Length: 467
Image 1: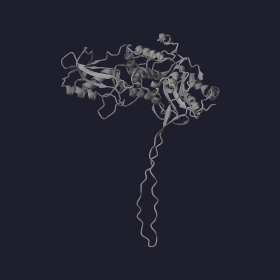
Image 2: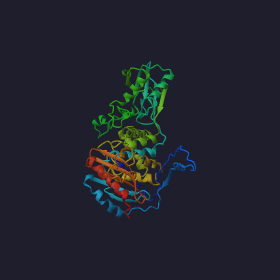
Image 3: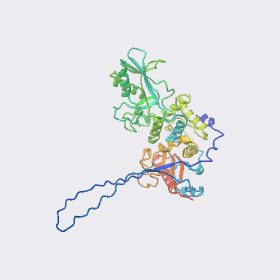
Image 4: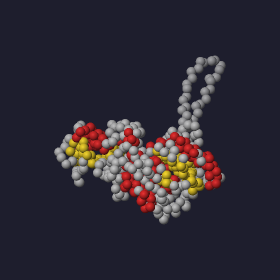
């Protein structure tokens, strides 16, 4: 992938961030519902004494949610003021090898940086680039289809995988790990309605090519719940326990889906094998995934590696590139390059960031986020809503939740964590109401050391009026 860096150096990089208009809004919803109950008091009658007056109950206050944009007139920090405020936080030895950049979301001006062009191990902040490329190339309503067709022999059907790892075999009325996902039960019902007699099932995974594990992945991460071999159909992302995020994963996720279909049809699971559908075979049943917008939100919110790899291949198929690790990475790079981003320094091995061999400069991450926040790439703007909220949601729910809560509710960011790398890329509203985008990357330190140090940098941005 070293060639990827050279191939995506473009003359348009750097021209795109001169004029920006702040379009971010934050929704402040304050709900106070006072339940007023009138209590009837029964008092004894006292001659010559007026009835006791009872105050009427207070009026019920109804919720009145409003979306209030931050004013464009809020002052931006000065570069000198920001550098002074950050000096102590960014020199924390807990950050190890540290790079970063901070920009004004409204103007796109970089206000502070440290070695922003240095390629760093990005961990799951890679998903910012995967999401951006998918949003730029695919419709928000794009769905992936799983089909069942007639097989080659009597009683044989073929389950054709379309690239959806979110199917669930849980019963109707129970969400799988991915709400809104397609169901094995729906396929079963359609097959039964068709009157097709089934005695064996082949699972066709030919839509994907290449290795199922990326360079820089470790087999132990399957049992640890981080990943599974990337095949084009899975149940709940290959989880052994469907509703548990970091559940151990299957080593045969596509066959598992075929066996679940067999169980629903009363077919012996031993009669499930791999195979290929004949061209033009009659379709018996089909189901579709949730829209891309939903799957992107789930990918970023939970930092879902399997979903990231599937979306990377979805993009590759759209761009007529090999639906493999290398094809997905090439498609991400080419899409962002075509959109005008400076791709110098990016070298990826996967779409999720689980590989220890991936490299991204902080500059590129922040450029994507600043473009999403400004007027240049409105297609990317929903990504900002997908980002976890510090101290509240997703992979940031347990950060800023105790101790120093300065950034809680104000920092929204994609996290990245590997054994010797941590990163944080997102935006924060400072005390003056100015929105700042940032990409902060730490290498050569364990996450228990580097993450608190990164959180302290983001908290400093929150507190900094820094004029």
